[in-house]
Length: 138
Image (tube, helix red, strand yellow):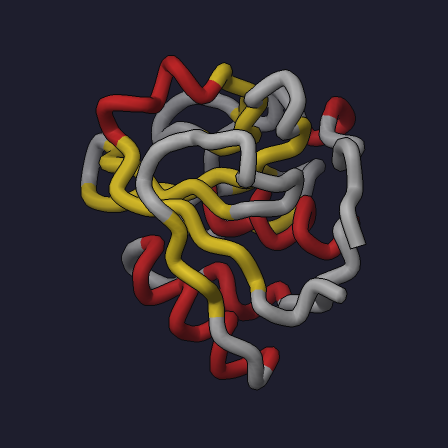
C-alpha cells in the first residue's frame, strides 16, 4: 500500500528528551519514528524506543513485529517510499528519522539537544548509513 505522506506537523518543534515517546513531554529520534510509523499502520510498542542506537531499535522492532526490515541502498532514489526509515550518523551515534513525504524528500526526526523537525533529505545525505523498509507493507 503506497501512502503519499504521513501527517507530521503536530509533532514538530517538540523538545528533545532521550527515550521520549510523548509529544507533550518530549521525543527522541526513535520516539518520533514510532509515532510516525504508527500513523502509517505499523503498531510498534512505545516501549521499543528505549534503545541506545538506531540499529538496536530496528532489531527490536523486527522482533516485536515478527517481520524484518529490508535494507535499501543508503541514498535517496525514486524507489524510496513514505514510511521508509532513514538511519544517519547523529551527534552521539546512529540516529533515525522517517520519510514523511517521498515526493518532497522530507524526513522527520528529533535531533539531540534540539527539537523535532523536518529536514530535506539532502541535509542528511552525507550522514546516511542506511534506509530501511518494513517488509510487512502490503
